Length: 114
Length: 116
Image (cartoon, rainbow over all chains, first blue to last red; front, side):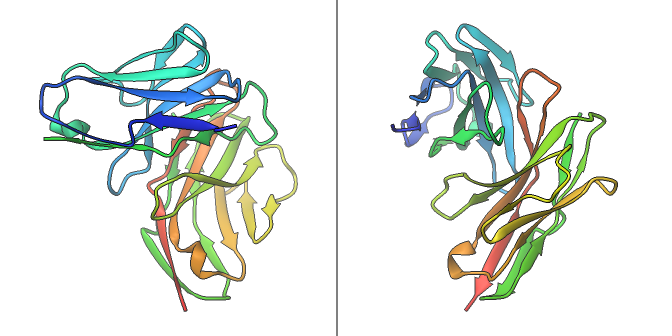
């Protein structure tokens, strides 16, 4: 049981390049989330999904797209990376019902856009 | 919209002493939950404790307790008998249970440093 995994762990992009971050969970969770964390800030929600085939915008969705074609995977795409997207990206998941309503977080992806 | 405020950017505590990290929240919803997460320098987010808005007793998990004052909209984390390994960033977060997204709203965090 690996929990929530993220690929890659680190990435450096040039402005204008595209990339996809992969989040995978093996806990059969319904809900999945993408957050970004910037220095001096807490985590901010980018996009989320309440089930396979569904996605919705969070607090800071601009410049990102997501897809949830399979229940266990949640992809975050950057079509044309900008320096403002330099951040640490966290994926999280939660079951439909949980004792503590907690979200389980992946280890994070550190992205630098030059 | 929900808002979490953590007014202490940084805190110091002597090893073996207790420390309180402040968190206030703002929401118009009646059914919600409050979390504390720990983020050590390695970067992962570690769940510590949860308090539901309808829970009558304050939550406790080992050395962690949550001082929940609903009327004041505060949810302070108390760490008893601090250890060097408690040095980390601590985030307070809220979930609104009436909405279908169950998304978390985070505060900006408090950096706790435990002094030997």
